[in-house]
Structure formats: C-alpha cells, structure tokens
Amino acid sequence: MTGEEFSLGSKEVQQTILILNLSVAQIDLSITEGDNSVNTLIDSFTYMSRHIEKIQAFSLKIAALAGESAQSLQTELQSEASELESKMNQSIIAFQFYDKLSQRLEHVSHGISGLAEIVSHEMRVKDAAEWKAFKTSVRQGTTMREEEELFELVFDQHTPVEEAISIMKQRMKQRMHEGEVLEDEDELF
Image (cartoon, rainbow, N blue to C red; front, top):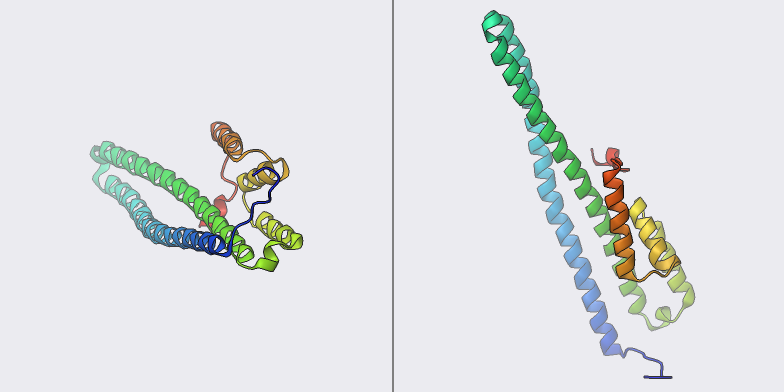
C-alpha cells in the first residue's frame, strides 16, 4: 500500500472495540478471582500466625513447669515454630508481589477501556487532543517504578515493545539480585 493511507472501516472498528472490551472483562474477572483467593490465603496465614504465637507461649510454659528435662523439647518446638514463621513471612512477600500484579492489570484494563472509548467515536479518534489526553491519563495511572520506566521506554524513547520488555526484565532481575525491597510493601497490609 505504498502512498495509500490505511483506515479501518466501521465493521473493523466495531470488532476491535469488542475485542478490547472482552480483554478488559477477562482482566477484571481474573483480578477478582485472584483477589478472592489471596484474601482467603491472607486470612489463613493470619490465623496460623496467631497460633504460632500461642504455640511459642505454651512451649515456654511447658518448659517452666517441667523443669530441665523439657528444655530440649522446648528448644526444638521453638525452632520449628520459628521456621514456620519464616516460611509464612516469605508467603506474605509473595502476596505483595501479587498485589503489584493486580495493580498493573487494573492499569492495563483502564488503558484498554480508554482506548476502546476513543476508537469507538469517529470524531474522537481523529482528534490529536483526545490522544494526548489519553496518553496523559495512562501515564498518570503508572503508580509503580517499573510501569513508569516501561512507559518512558515505549512512549518517550520509542523503544520497540520486545526490546522494552527485555530491558525491563533485566532491570527487575538486577534489582532482585541487589536485594531491593518492594516499594509498595506497606500498601498491602
């Protein structure tokens, strides 16, 4: 199509909008299912955490009542409870990563919905101000460091998507190896 301008017909635009809306619905349903599962897990871990504290307290009482012969049993019990507590803390960190994933998916859903809204109106799709406002809205929705960096790579630096993904994966891997703590750690609980 050298020299010709490509444009979608109304039927193609309608099909595009349907696909975008389907994608939004799938993302939203996935987030809802994930949230329900994670909330159940959080409740379970909170319950288990309270019981670990009770087990540790009871082991101290048993050791005090039984004297020296129970000291080794009490030490083993404390050790097991500490290991369980450590694993629970690792699980909580995993929940925090899930929380970030949910936030990202919500931002993607918002972006796709906005895109479908612009594309569905002939006048808006041709309006440069609409596209600029949409881009600004998407950028303002980037609440995490990685999202902002990805936005900069794709929109500001015009990096091809595959390359941008590769760059971001490398950065995230490097940060994990450097022991960087989650930025949004306090937001989950």
